[in-house]
Image (tube, rainbow, N blue to C red; front, side, top):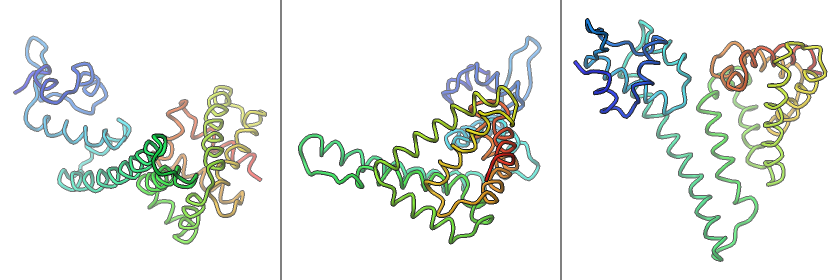
Length: 250
């Protein structure tokens, strides 16, 4: 058995984090001693390793808890999945680093870069990240042809358009945080939020329709991975955005 301090030392996780994991039911100790010390067995050590792989892939804690506590959870399958996803993440990082290295070389007076080359790695990383997190669901809902066309549109964005898209996305989050606090889908903020969200989607969608926008909004609340993308900015943000899109999408 390991004490909480010993487990923290070998894992690099703080004792405060381990106590939090215990409190939320993510990683409970094998037993608690008579004097109140948390004690961990090899099972908990292995489970913590599993949790840390999920965290490396940016899974929210409550999602990890649901997965590892499920009766159907299989350690080996999860580890194999981690490996596949981490290899994809490694590839994305390598592409971004390649772009960064070329940029540094150009700044030092070496070979020049075209504007497209400056953003190729970043755009490719964005596409692969979206495919990793949402690709299966999006392709099932909208089809391979539409998703491939959307990815091609992203890769074809100019330097200015790519920067504009990122700026609009940040504006969406800004308005969303303000609007959700009022819980009023009839407000001007809610209407502006939907218009901005439409503008953001239009940078990557080959063709915009209100029905497709509303369909995507349903996925924001039906799938935790989509919901967490918005809820990280404000509690209930995904549900409010869905309701606003249903009200104002045209």
